[in-house]
Amino acid sequence: MSEKPVSEMAFEEALGELEAIVRKLEAGEESLDASIALFQRGEALKRHCEARLADARERIDKIMLDAEGKPKATEPFDAG
Image 1 (cartoon, rainbow, N blue to C red):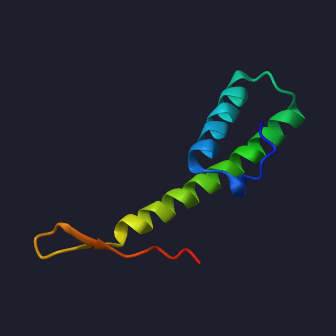
Image 2 (image 1 turned 45 degrees about the vertical axis):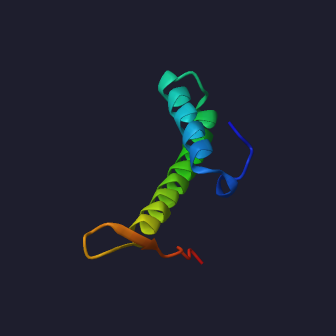
C-alpha cells in the first residue's frame, strides 16, 4: 500500500493501487485491523478515481460541434 496522498495520484496510479487492495481483501489473509485500513484506503482511492472520471467526462462534454456534428473546437475545462 502506497503512502502517497490519494489526492496527488494520477488516475492510473490510483486505479492500480485500488486493484491491488481488492486482491488483498479478497485473499482474506490480512488481520482485521489491516483489512479495515485497506478498505478505508480503497474507499478514498475509489472516490478519487470517480472524481477524475467525472472531470474527464466534463472536458469531453465541452467539445464544441459544428453544424454537421463534427468537433470544431474545444473549450478549456476550468475545474477551479
